[in-house]
Image (cartoon, rainbow, N blue to C red):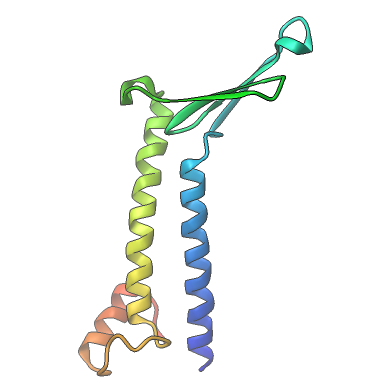
Length: 126
């Protein structure tokens, strides 16, 4: 029973990490640049994300614009976009495999070869 409890904790932490990866993917704060002019009134902060760029002015007004094309994005942010999307897809795949092969679920009825294969794919052993 202790193994099932640890599996539940592990799956919960994996879901939390996957959700936070999605949050990181959506937020436009991957690169932050501040420009302060001769006075504080002309200060602007530029936020560059992997999907859009935003300008926050000193008055608190924020304007965001989605990138027109993939070529408008710098190379480091293009790589970050690709790797983040890959991480989200692989994360949900790993979560599904972990849930199917976990002892706390009964997706696989028999304790035979199928369960051993899922435990091998999952990467853990009791």
